[in-house]
Length: 534
Image (tube, rainbow, N blue to C red):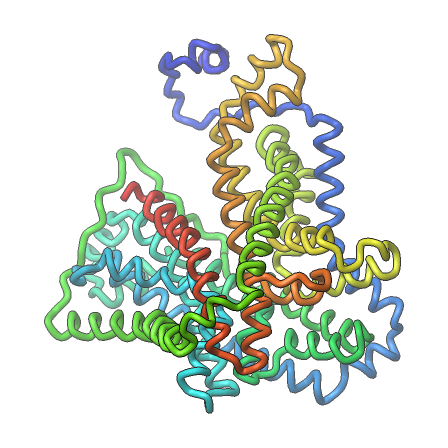
């Protein structure tokens, strides 16, 4: 009876539903053939980079693979990659967790401002961080420089999920620990830290994937990684076997990283159970010495992550003067960045729509499998996606090689999950009953989807499109390999200027990229605050 009432228009209009003590499962709908076909097509395209690696490996043969992979150069690159991961990930976790705890659970003065400053480094592209540090300290290079700049650029990926989890953590857990005699340090290690496992593992995974995929940061400080070596091989041999085999090793590193993150999740339950609502978080009072140390930590982190880039950028803007802003390529670079960003955001959001609708309205094992395929390309470095598209277009679709469509397709493959997650959340908040009522009034499935569901899901779609747009505006590697001749975005224009050691001319490009990225930072910050109603 209660379930029938919940499906009625009266329930939708506001009639209270029966509190049955469990969450009612939404009724599934039959998947429209065209939606299912579109979702399958997008999933197959998402598997293209992985299929490229497997296909090239089979075509090359085991003897050639062994000859290309079992080389001292590959061992050196693998050693560099492992050292970079082993040194950078713990430092990002330590810094991210420490800042999250100080800004969310302590009485640190001005903690709201410090929390905003902890997220702000995400507005600065990683290769701009490298540009700032190399400008300030030209002798900075090698592994120490790679670790320093990587921690500065990527620790917010750990800070954001950990801070959000600390806001939602029920203080009753800590009350139980205190009642058992645990001291504050033991309480954090044995009670709070285990509850942060998912957030830390997820943030560390994002950092690790960025470390494997980043090109501009490490090329500028002369630290060799698989991505820099693949790009150099491609430039010298034009997609030769050596570049393809290095891409295969890089894909294996990404898959191992994904498997490690999955194993770190564990099987523990993290949801709060019990009656009532959780209490507000309590604030830990810092002692005089701890408060001074905390202020020094947040001041130092803000100075390194924001002070150095802004100071260096300001100096180069002053050195370049008005002439740097009068460069004939600057405005066309901004225009092409906006065009590619808008077109890529629209294409990616449209490609994510069928899978987002099916995952909410018609869930099932097959659809879960199709949905997981969409995350594969996003976990692979952009240079692997670009190499896959170069090979496919050259061999099977030559007219598409180095076209705008090819660049947009690469953006869609890399950034599809950003649109999918936001759009799926928006569709989940659109009642299925409204869609059913529209169909009962004679609307076709497409009309009901377009006029009802997508209108209600518009905020989620807009948020996903904004995330994709801002990711495209800072993308470098795939754009360098796939863009048509004469195409220059802000990222590629910045890279061309820094390659010529013309740092003053590169400063306007860097400033414009930061200004475009600021809305993303504000969006992430406010969404993170809204998760706890603050």
